[in-house]
Amino acid sequence: MSVLLYGAYGYTGRLIAQEAADRDLEPVLAGRDAARLDALGKKLNLRTRVVSLTQPDRLRRKLEDVPAMLHCAGPFVRTGPPMVEACLDTGTHYLDLTGEMEVFRRLAGRSEEAEAAGVMLLPGIGFDVVPSDCLAHFVAGRTEGATTLEIAIYARGNVSQGTLKTLIEQMGDGGLVRREGQLRSVPPGWTSRTVDFGDRERRVISIPEGSVVTSGYSTNVPNVTAYLALPPLVQSLLRASQYAQGLLTWPPVKQLLKRLVEQRREGPTAEERRQGRTVVWASARQKERPPVTARLHGPEAYPFTARAAVNAVERVLDGTAPPGYQTPSTAFGPDFVLDVSGVERTIVEEPASA
Image (cartoon, rainbow, N blue to C red; front, side, top):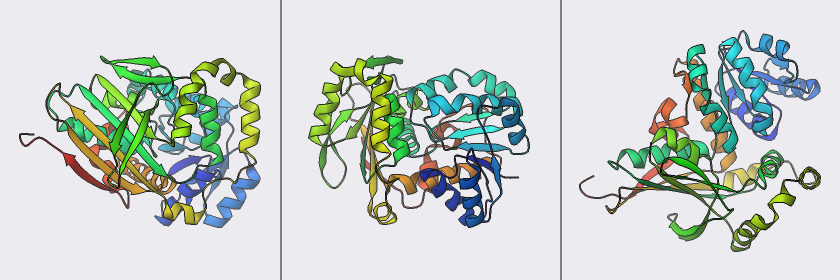
């Protein structure tokens, strides 16, 4: 028995398929395009299945003989619901690569239903949710009664067409933070600060990153803000976008931007993936006490995602799949991220009594 890998021929899907094949997992490659599936299946010597999300009965039949599926084809706010329904109907564990706030919120709201069906719903099993959620869980666990959690991300490297298209789908949504235990909408780039990423300090700006939602379940810390290191010009444009939110949500504008994205190359080259790197920083504080702060240093975002996703699949196939809605750290523990090849965790600051 193995996992169904949907969206296997996309940029990230191919990296995951290769990683899984290298570990002799033999995933079943799936997607809508028979020709692209066939080419990838022959290259990796793996089975393939043509799967359409618009045909519920056929989709359920494609899932009946697999214990889990890994969804790699976003935007997940659109592609996720039919797959989730099929997984709940067939008792198939659901994993995906999303970073979309709405997806986390929707799936969290179906936790009891999934638990009753014996199905694990685990969105966000790649970069940046795996490192941010696991590190947030780690520092919060070392801070008794933590009331404030801050997370910051730095990534050096390029992005794929698929990632950019997902970001375009989210344009105009604004920002998101957690305050007093509740998710709160805020303007884009609502706040900023300086973070030491180890090599040097960088200015970061608040973003609606997945850990704002996931950490509410994994840590119970009531106040959470996530940040991203961006060039100063991009930070200024992000703040200014609040005045054009109506325009950015207009479908013709999104379609134009997606066509422009399609003129780019598909994603980072192999050399860019080798040269890239990521750093995630997290700090938890209990009122006026000194914080507990830690950093994760890891590989470029796409290799990080492929390794983390396949690690998660291996855990599920070995029987670790707690039913209901899960985050990476609630499913597998805060040290799960340390199993990703190339990741190191460093405690930067911790009170002597902690």
